[in-house]
Image (tube, rainbow, N blue to C red; front, side, top):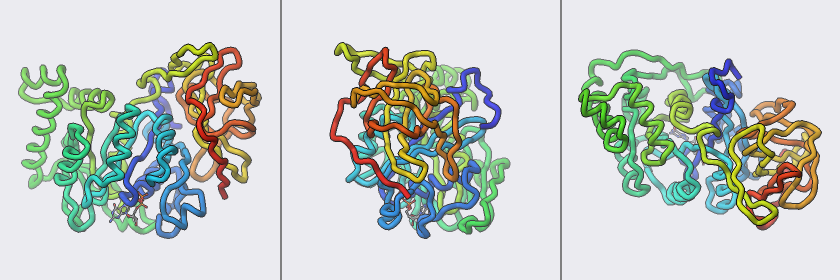
Amino acid sequence: MRNLRHANPLAAVRNLGILAHVDAGKTTVTERILYATGTTRKRGEVHDGTTVTDFDPQERDRGITIFAAAVSCAWDGHRINLIDTPGHVDFADEVERSLRVLDGAVAVFDAVAGVEPQSESVWRQADRHGVPRIAFVNKMDRAGAELDAAVASIRERLHPVPLVVQSPIGAEDAFTGVVDLVRLRALTWTGDDTDDDTAAAAHEGPVPDDLREEANRRRRLLEEAVSELHPAALEEFCAAGSLGAGTLTAALRDLTRSGEGVVVLCGSAYRNRGVEPLLDAVLAYLPSPLDVPPVRGTHDDGGERERAADPEAPLAALAFKVNATATGRLTYLRLYSGTIEKGDTVWDATARRTERIGRILRVRADRHAPLDRAVAGDIVAVVGLKSARAGSTLCAPSAPLVLEPPGVAEPVVSVA
Ligand code: GDP
């Protein structure tokens, strides 16, 4: 990770999920994020089966994301742990568990289809888990793509207050960029970016004259929508007649985290347009592990306990995925509190037995990086756990806690 600017390194972590209806472009968005963050050198394409988050051959064959995997990448001094959530309705339990371990999500919509039935069910699940979201209206390059219509369908069917922070530049095949309505800057992309070997180059510049009026109009709408929801913004809006970029950004962050509003961005993942501003928005608006409420669990004495994201507190971690891989049995953990080190003895409160932490890995798309320890807020994979299943709680032996009631044991998934 590049130089962290934050006093507490956890402030620079985003545990992020991508939620979508099948075919909206979740896999492509994920691939482009990994590419934009330098995690992969060559962009995977969904159609040729080289995508890195879809490990399982069965998944490749079916062209859907079945098994959630977590991949870490770095963007502007932050670490983004990307948790792949299954989009298919048959895997609702897995979606449910992924939603537990992430702190924020990007909901991907198709700019032509707008809200589809599955986007609706995943959206409701995210509501239940209180997951703050950003909406990304994808496929802006498609014939019939229309940002305003997609935003209207988000408002009508999902009922959030949409806070549109971009204005598209060009339509359909000629969609070349966006105006950032917060900073009032134009971002455009050039290059034959559907080609694996050629990255789309982003250019930033002033808003072109012919787009200025439209950008100002949309900026005004954004300022009004934000001021209606946010008292500090309203105060500035009433006093000054407009909102500064600083106030607007802070208000958008507050509204995203409280769930009162949903920031809407647009782009074309396939053409690699709009991915960098999406990542910037993830850092600006979605919460870090420090910004989310403490997790609750049931202590052995039957009482409830809360655990905040404190590396010094007793360990509480949820296993959310177990994969049998060539590296060994990989157990993906979300640490809520405490610290784990290689060789530590921990208590599997679900199986009621002790476990020993083997190697700790930061899972990347192309390789896994060994870690000496992992702390509260992080998502890592551990090698060598024997009993842990998806849904198991690992905790300090002295502070037994179950985060999730034991359910049907999930099978260990073999991954090539
Ligand atoms: P998922 O099922 O949500 O993971 O969707 P995929 O990422 O697999 O994408 C579904 C299909 O839509 C694939 O054929 C992609 O190439 C295509 N696709 C994804 N993003 C875009 C986009 O921005 N524009 C266009 N035209 N097609 C896209």
